[in-house]
Amino acid sequence: MSYQEKQNIVNIFSGLLITAIYAVIVFQRHQQGQFDLTEDFSKWGVIFLIYIGVSVAARIIILIVFHIINAIATREEEIPVEDERDKLVKLKAIRNSHYAFSGGFVVSVMGLAVGMPVHWIFIAFVGFGLISEIIDNSSQIYYYRKGI
Image (cartoon, rainbow, N blue to C red; front, side, top):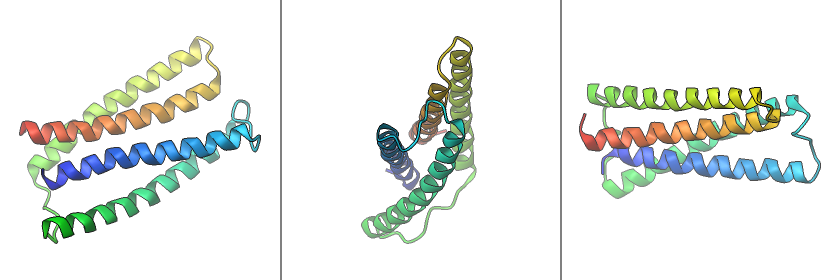
C-alpha cells in the first residue's frame, strides 16, 4: 500500500473520529441545557468555528503521528514527492467531493424550503461536509489503485 493510500485511510478515520467526538460533546451540552441549539443560531456559528479549530489542530497532530509511525514501520524518512499523477488524482477526487457537497447543500436548502427546522440544516451541513471528505479520500484511494 502506498504512502498516499495510507494517508487517505488515516484521514477518513480521523475525520470520522473527530466529528463523532465533537458531535457527542455538543449534544451532551445541549441535553444538559448549557445552550439551546434549536433557537440560538449565533451559537451554531460559535460551534462551527470551534469545530474548525479543533479539527485542524487534531488533524495536524494525527498526521504527525502517522508520519512518525509510517517512517518507523517502513524505514523511509522522506515523504514521496508529489508528481503529475498525484495532482491528477487529487484533482479528480476534489471534483467528486465538490459534487457531493454541492448536492448536499441543495438537499439542505430544499429541506429548508419544505419546512424543516433550521437547526437540522446546520446538522446536514456538517453531515454532508463529512460525507464529501470521505468521498474525497475514498476517490483518491480508488484512483491510486485504478492507476490513472
